[in-house]
Image (cartoon, rainbow, N blue to C red; front, side):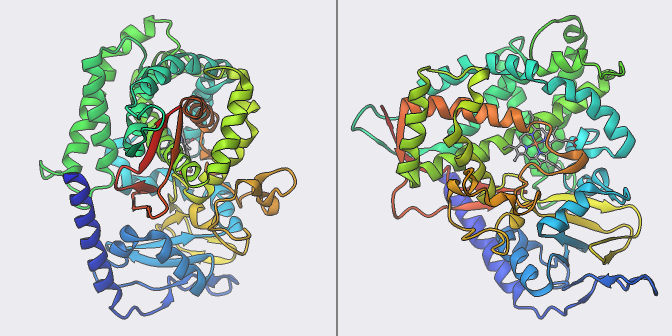
Length: 480
Ligand code: HEM
């Protein structure tokens, strides 16, 4: 409750600041003049208010700011945020050009560094080109069907145990305001600890690691971005140090071990060419993958619960599908046997993209669809806004899973119209893992619970790189 009050106050404060700063006149203009004779156009946009630029408006309601700019200036626009120019890309062709990165002009390492560098440096997303491909070839071997089957085997009993402890009421005694987001977050973190680190972790250690990890993830969202010994940034750095210390100390045992957990797998995994990870690589990749897997799956699953609470006919349809499977928990072979759940998940990822913005920096002068972007420019690729454009999606704000049905396939308009997992060299390596985890949890939830969202409930989202429910996402839950 105290937390909710704090979050609401923080939100109101940010909204007031955003309103005040949006009152400043902002002069539109070109980002930079293209070289004479190049035939390129300048990127148009506006700097926003002095000093902070549009930073506060972006924190408060990033989608609104992005859509307004898109309507004014098109799919390639620029703005200013905390003293930096930021080019934003919205639209399937615009995001495709940056993801495909044909001229190797966009660096993922340099784009993500200012956002999360100190906490996740040397993670695979913070690498580029040849080096990135080298690491990706090795890491890919940790996400083969055989490996995923092993991870599901580890997950299943932990999902059963966690759901049996969810204190929703028994029949007719709904728990009003069951905090779905918080519970799903705890569950996802437990699963990550078990699947990624393995059973060798004691409960106490797991708890300590989870807090360190949580601090490292939050670090990237700090407003005051320096190590002043207290605050979100500093806690993030201490979290990173604790994680490093743990993984380094454990590595020899895992190299000697044979477990199915990701930590042990990364110690042994080898590309087709026989390439392997060093100890430091394993440490860096572990810390990064835990982050990449955690908030994303939590947001996707929580928002799916929310939409199914709002749309009881869909919840019933998915429950019938799960009942028809005739099993308390899914096996690896069942992942493709829940087609309704697949549609509902796709639609949720479209409306509430867990990773709304991806960052790059240009390492040479380049262009996106004929718009000139000079070297050294920070670029935000925005799949979230892209998936909500009414030029590409009929009635984009409606949650309508049937739009992905074989009869409609509205995503077929462009291969990057639906792209919650990104594209190109850095496309999410965990997308099958994510689908498997979400389906495994949702199947058990549908069999064990019914839930609804009160008619007068309004979503209260805050934004990091994606949407996060500020109030724990209260849903009325009943055990079946
Ligand atoms: C619904 C859940 C998820 C969503 C929406 C999501 C989304 C994304 C996106 C958009 C990227 C591209 C980032 C960029 O281009 O800058 C990405 C990269 C990545 N994701 Fe996911 N992700 C999810 C779950 C997971 C899971 C469960 C794992 C691991 C088990 C994972 C591991 C990774 C890794 C390692 C990368 C970096 C790949 C590279 O740089 O080569 N993700 N993810």
